[in-house]
Length: 198
Image 1 (cartoon, rainbow, N blue to C red):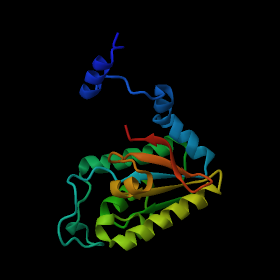
Image 2: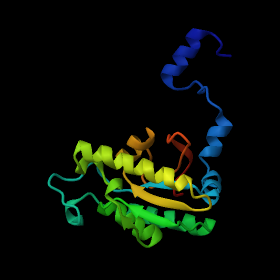
Image 3: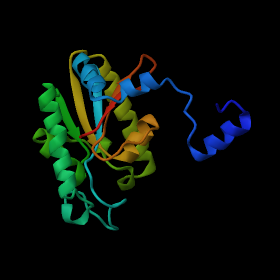
Image 4: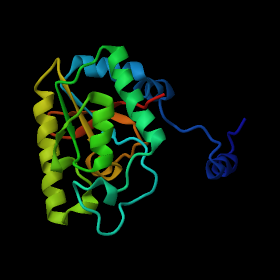
């Protein structure tokens, strides 16, 4: 129907043309079942973007450890965090370790979903650190993913920020969305599946 090149170009500009991807594979990778299967197999990390915290950046002069100075979860975000935990419970999935950015919106997400987490600065927002520190943190995260890949049958949960996920895998995530990550033999980070709270 739209075989003429000019028609296809016009459709691409409007966003109506079908993307040239394997749609079944893409759909499979984005189902909760795909994420649960990957987590049960282990050797992976599920990196969650913190639940909904309205706004974009922290206020000027924010202080770690003082939630009143930061951007925080709202009621919808707290409900979202609880749904994350409920999904793991219903799937019978128990992480070997839960780690979180020290920012309050991440630690609260982890507390509501999993009962708590170890604070890990490497998962912290790049907006709070110097560029060199951010590069070091990225190296630590890649090393931890490589270590996780050597441990089949177990998985970790990391609660972090969109900017961290973007730097690590060149993909974003919605609030409360999780990316199941694995490092391959060359150290490249692969996104195996995605899952978001209903």
